[in-house]
Length: 92
Image 1 (tube, rainbow, N blue to C red):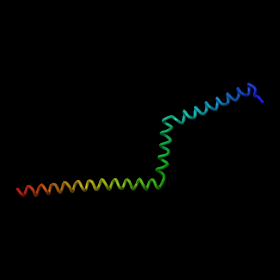
Image 2 (tube, rainbow, N blue to C red):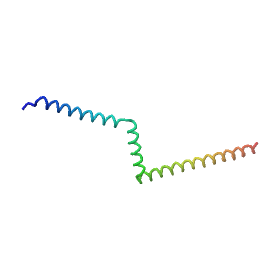
Image 3 (cartoon, rainbow, N blue to C red):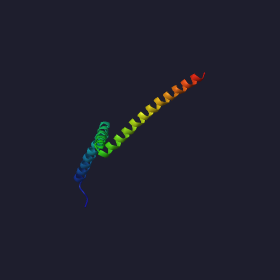
């Protein structure tokens, strides 16, 4: 059975309203501020996870250890160079 023109026009208007609503929602979701807020929320949620906290703590401790080792090694190298310079100056 064929539909009458009023039914078709109502369907077209309903489809237009749905499409307009979908486009508005997509425009709202694609705003950079909304992306930033979503990323911030996701990062905050991740940082609340105990396993993530443990990993970050381990990485932090490793970085501090490497810095301390590097400073110690640098000071020792300077000390060794000074000692070598002293020994060489005594030879002449």
